[in-house]
Length: 107
Image (cartoon, rainbow, N blue to C red):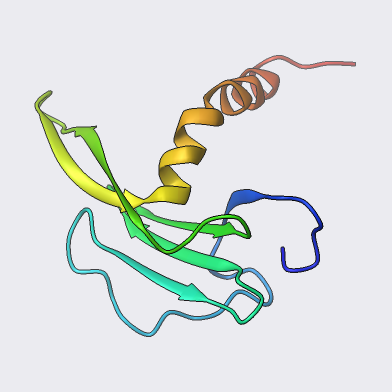
């Protein structure tokens, strides 16, 4: 991510090579923690129903307000990292295409 010459944002798993370890545990839904390198690559970790980890070379460690649907159908407002908010807006079609590609076999 640090060597890319264009803006990029994406998810990753915490066990991936060269991803820094976060020392603190996230206590409840909507909490986040950030690490920013000297090259301004941001690592964000956010707790939704599961822990989500993002890498970005074009976002700052800031929060945005988002509405999340709870299991009972009600909506609740949470703070999440700006990188995750943008990712969720943009990546819906790509994730759906990946999901459908796994359902149908191609020769």
